[in-house]
Amino acid sequence: MQILSLGQILRANAFHLN
Image (tube, rainbow, N blue to C red):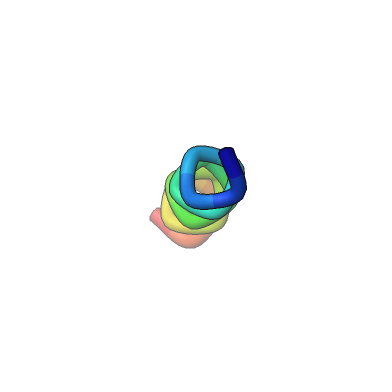
């Protein structure tokens, strides 16, 4: 269940960067 959290964090970071 850690991978799911990591994926969401990465997506949130990308959204903020974009």
